[in-house]
Amino acid sequence: MADHIWTAEDVADHFEEAFRTLRKLPPVKVQGYFSAWPQIVRTDREILAMEPEPMRVWPSASAITRLEQTFDWVLWIGEDERRLIWWRAARRPWKEITYELGVNRSTAWRQHKLALTKIATRLNAAAA
Figure: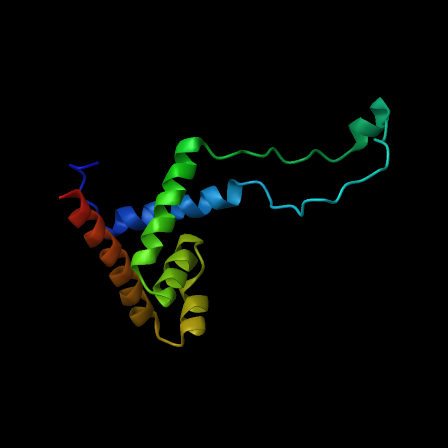
C-alpha cells in the first residue's frame, strides 16, 4: 500500500466496511450462565413448521484486520469527529446528525470531510 494515495472517499469507504464488519461479529454474551434444561427433541413436523432462521455471515480475517486498522485511525481525531464519522459510516441521515450536533447540514458535512481528510493526510504521510 506504499504506492496507494489515500483520499477522503477511500477513508470513508474503509469506515463503512468497518461498520459492516462490526455488525457481522457475533454478539457478546455474559459468561457463566448456562441452562440445565435438556435439549428439546422435535418431530419432523415441528421442524417443518418452524420459522427459518436467518443465515449468519461471519466476517473474514482480512475484514477484521482492516477493522482493527480503523480503530487505530480514530485515535488521530477528536471525539466529536469520531462520532460523526461512525454515524455516516452507519448511513445515519444528515438530518439526525445535524440535530445531535446542533449545526446546519453544510457545517456537519464540512466537519465530516475535514475529519476524513485528517486521517487521509496522516496515512499518506506515514506511507511516504
